[in-house]
View (cartoon, rainbow, N blue to C red):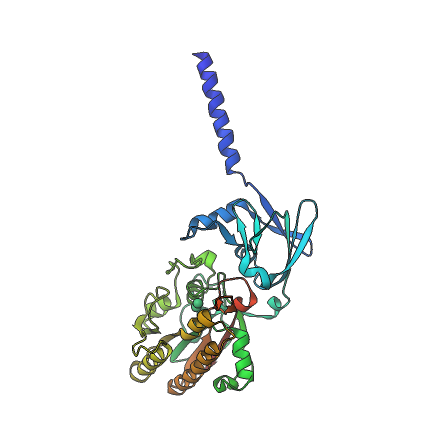
Length: 379
Ligand SMILES: [Zn+2]
Ligand SMILES: [Zn+2]
């Protein structure tokens, strides 16, 4: 009997030790800047993202963990092994193809690396860009004299207190900042010529419609609002629309063919492609004009989709993409003219767009995806 107890004790102890060591981080990669260690990526971080993804993922974009360590725009990364071998990569050229596995292996264009340290060289541009997509809800709330957003980390970007009767938020889905600026410079988008500068802003990671929408409605990042990418379509945090309706304001939204995100508390008009011409912007435009002219709410949200659609299909340097952008510029001019006096306006994109072999895409931690235009102005 005694012998059996001893055996049992031994077995239980061994099982506990095995269990405990399984809970320990299996590996850790140091994150350094100018060769000074500032953070790390651990086994548990990667597993957490693999587990909460709605897809069967084997790897997570490396950009996710760089973003979690507060990197948004990066010039270069250098992978350094235990034995001090190193290789440097221009970040933007690998951002779409750099991933990390649960085993701590970094895969770049399908090739595996086992670094002990990743040295990150941030882009100096990151320090010059002041606006964030998370500033939009706090700014609109202030201009409408609403209570602040309880979870916002972004801040109001206009210092005067709002005394506006109406506010309009116009989302131009998938507009790449660089392309917009170059079309404005070329005189193709006269509506934008009234602005001295088109502000650059940083969106959240992953730069996809759902995460960005949660961020511009709550003023909070994905880590707080729970919207980590495709598959999450709603947030439990308080949104701008919640705050507005709570304060007795009317909120309307004019959307395209479907809702990418739960626009709780907004009275939504789905436009669709009614005339079957392959585009929804003309329908979104017509419905927006109708709302403005007949039942202008306190807060109006308009979402134009075509630029993003053309970007995916043909890429951001295609004629189709440029044409969609120029067309939406024309819509903006007409919307502006139709808006009542004393309206606060924000025009912005949710994310940018980069060229791929198939056309275009977004969702990576590359500057073309992360930098967005943001314009705050009024009529
Ligand atoms: Zn989008
Ligand atoms: Zn898209």
